[in-house]
Amino acid sequence: MEQAYARGDVESVVLYNEMVLARSDYPAGFPDLRRAAYQPESRQLVIDFELPTASIVPAVAEYRYVKARRAIEEKPRKPADIKAIYRELVAQVALRTIHEVLEADQGNHIDAVVFSGYINKIDATTGLDTRPYLVSVRTTKEAFLAINLARVEPQACLKNLGANVSASPEEARAVRPVVEFDMVDPRFIGETDVLSQLDARPNLMELTPSEFEGLVGNLFTQMGLETKLTRSSRDGGVDAIAFDTRPILGGKVVIQAKRYRHTVGVSAVRDLYGTMLNEGASKGIIVTTSGFGPDAYAFANEKPLEMIDGGGLLYLLESVGRPARIIMPSDV
Image (cartoon, rainbow, N blue to C red; front, side, top):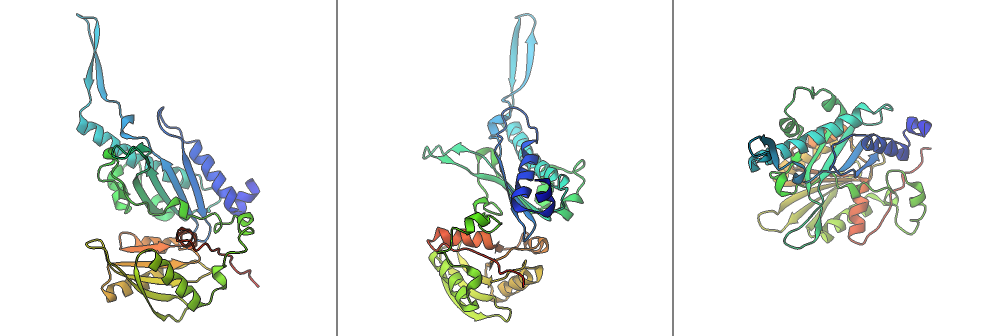
């Protein structure tokens, strides 16, 4: 395993980082479910982390012994204090986890980390199990290691990193994860034994640019958008204009598709953002068969841009009944 990890073998990198997460010591009552996935194309580690609920904060602030009555009295903690402590807990766990995996990156395999923390609870209105995410953040290794964690205010630090943080974590008000963990598809990140069983599914890398254009357009149409394809770009990527017809939340969306075998750089994301502004669109989406580099993620931070890599594309296609696979051509 040590040799496989040194080579950057995906399974070994994941196992190594899950061992790092498993050895992270927390107080009694904290959940211990922590998952990791690795995207070698973008050298990105994705962490899915179960957080404790607000009940982890003790409801009693202090105890006092009354000698005259030989009794112990409890002083309840104020609700506002419970909220403040819990919000600090959520922020500290996120920063601590990112710090631990980056400090443990002996093989220097990680350029970026995505941390998403959620809780498991029962929806009081439906009685069903739910898993709302309370925090989700993506950061590059370079940016995070420049932070002096001993001196930061955790919640402000997360905000500066562009994190999605629940406005009311104690009420389990959910945020959208930066990366859906299930979208980090194992068929794309190196599970070749799974790929071998998918021969009946089309390999997206064998499609022509126009076929890939049609596939992307069809995908977003089935997802509920009114999609109109435009002319292909010189590098084989395609642009589409889509309209989300929902009132208030909807609007014009610019979609760019890139059937790439190599990592998509920041220039492509800049181009998408420029196109979005020129079109007066409310959102830009870039879809690729490969992955994105850390500079691309850094540029997209806090902008109305969504980046869907190969694993995410496979996940979305399967969700609309169009399963596919991505097998990169071998170097000649």
